[in-house]
Length: 232
Ligand SMILES: Nc1ncnc2c1ncn2[C@@H]1O[C@H](COP(=O)(O)OP(=O)(O)OP(=O)(O)O)[C@@H](O)[C@H]1O
Ligand SMILES: [Mg+2]
Image (cartoon, rainbow, N blue to C red; front, side, top):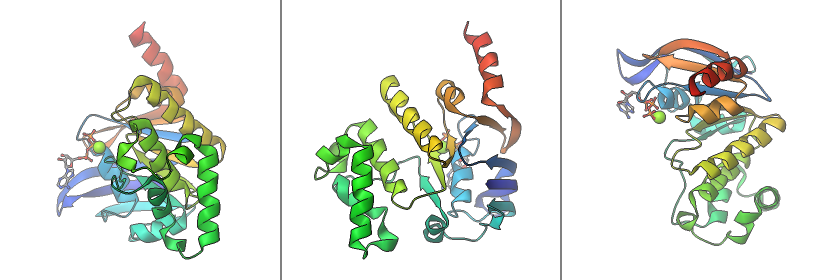
């Protein structure tokens, strides 16, 4: 569904951070990208979402090129992005944050309302707190708002940068359960995480980056055996 081929991208001309990254993320699958700090994981998601223009390479969604498509068009094509710094407006209420996810159709109040209600059914905790400022919520609830906001556009693909960052073990479990649920609803999830253990447990396929390139990739089930060998 989402395919990246031979991607070169960075922040300065002729200084690529990504130096030939290729991957695929399919519907009904969780694809995890792992790698050391600074290897370019966030840069990869930013480039896919159109925040950075690649110097070389191809990014396609269902065969259609996404190169040069700006982020505000991306969301119309079915790509949502949850950045590493999570992108919530802390001073705005939960509901205002969710409604920001419906910006492109904000004048269609009935549709906005319907999508908000869908989110409140999915996340009852958010319904109770809908008029509270997002910054006052627990870390896990904030992550729910971020996901809920992404869902307002009915994405086909969600790019998630470090879903478990800053969360306790228990909340990390909850966030991964939520991603598992979204996968079963048919969404393609491409995530980047430091939490290798959780990523391996939930992902279908894992890519490991090194020095801005693919190091290796494999079905997560194969790597779990490897992991067990290390942990036992
Ligand atoms: N806005 C920026 N301007 C210039 N260089 C940047 C910028 N953001 C990141 N970099 C550099 O790009 C490289 C890759 O950064 P990136 O954020 O993609 O890494 P990462 O794999 O997501 O790391 P982490 O695991 O710490 O989140 C790093 O060397 C970083 O210093
Ligand atoms: Mg990062």
